[in-house]
Length: 131
Image (cartoon, rainbow, N blue to C red):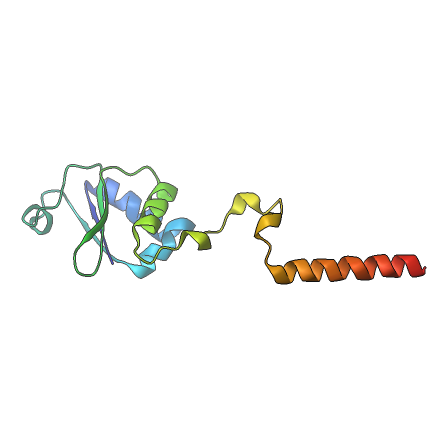
């Protein structure tokens, strides 16, 4: 995939720095060909890119199809979520939910976990009754 950032040097540098430093964007820096251009560069002006954003950010497939475009930068987490959802290989069921680590979601436990839990409880209760 290709990630293209179009805007002033300060705006482009902010996005590029976040791509390198921010955990949620780092995966895209390694998976995408990252390009950045000022808005008046021939490579974007003469090829039909929107260049009026602050900055304009494109995600394109290898064949050039636009998967995502945004005309502003609302921070690394916002961009990472948009890029993940635009990725044709994105699988939302594999997203980690860091908010639910403190509470166990009993409905999502696989069958083997229920069996292990039942066996543990059975053995604990049996041991307790033998004492």
